[in-house]
Length: 172
Image: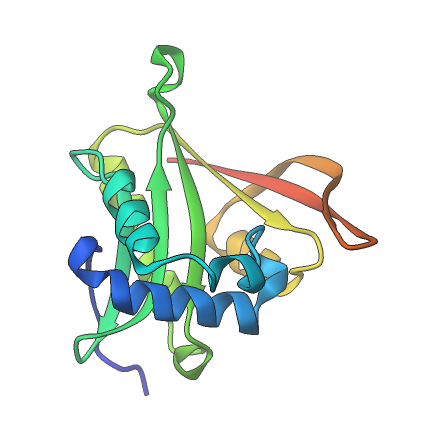
């Protein structure tokens, strides 16, 4: 049974909940992020307030949260380039849903919500990047219609282990 969820832009007021969920994401799914729990847990609360506030750029850019009964259970970020010749593009980052709420369609709902916002702005193409070791996310993006468009070999190094970055795109 799918739990009813609401989606809205995350603001600085949501920073404590965002910090908690972000740290959980880095602990439970480190293969999905470039940041590490070790580094992020040392950041002061003000860092998370700043991160959320700095990401907000009208009309829609920033972090979006998925809430169930006013509890933040997922988030993602949409961004764009500041370059004039890239204003037709958008980037989807940091998609995460609490494992206790997975398998209920929440990630798809959140992603479709932001994709629809981008369509309203006449954005033509969206890019995502994921780490090759995060194999489970590939099927999710394939299902949404994203197509692989590039690989950056050994673009990430964690200790002595390398991972490739896979870039995918969706034409809106």
